[in-house]
Length: 315
Image (cartoon, rainbow, N blue to C red):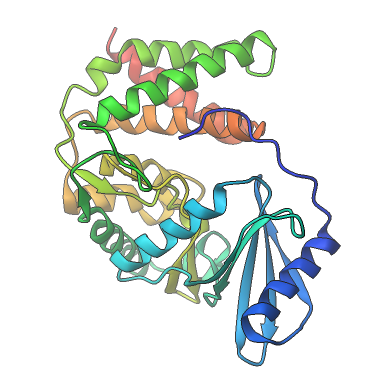
């Protein structure tokens, strides 16, 4: 995985809408207006309705990301009982467009983060939701590879052979950010202390290189009412330690549904899972900061506190 800061290309919404509309026309032959749905650090999504159906166009603001996203959507979709968006058409930047983009079919509903009926559902229905999510994710995890690493090119014999250099690179970039006064010292100090305990935290060998989604939190689970309609938006999918997927379950409103604990109850966990989960969560959040430049204290601060609390127990 790349560690360096990604600089998004300049983007004008009106031009993006026109571009999205033209992509759908190439697919269907029908020209309709595109409606902006939203976006993150490196992508913008538009919806285009035609007589053939509804489509979502995702425009990437950085080169090289569409190839991996479309590859991972197809791979995950082939292994999961809950559907992923189907990639229908892909366009790569050239002298005319300037952006990579792809067209998907639409998964109905809204993400589970904003589903009030689901949030207020009875405990039994919330656990039923958790069971369906975790069983689907476990099906993804059952797909393994002889090597660990990025789904496009897994090439490491062990998980730590792949993950340790990645984590060390995150720490190095964080230290440089601290010198530029972009990242406060407490965060970097906690990263260092966690790295000093790397051999302890990762002392148990990971025996299988499992396919992971990489970002399966409630914001990437689509629902209609209380029914799951699909999973979306994988991020940095890998053949990895399956427990790397689980820290995302605690993000946002995930604890309301006991997603992480439900997965562990059914499929077990490693002895040092609490330490690994804290390490993965903190290092991932710093990685996201390095890539995007966005620091969200509401997310970062609890991760630092949790990692520190666990580290203090070992000293």
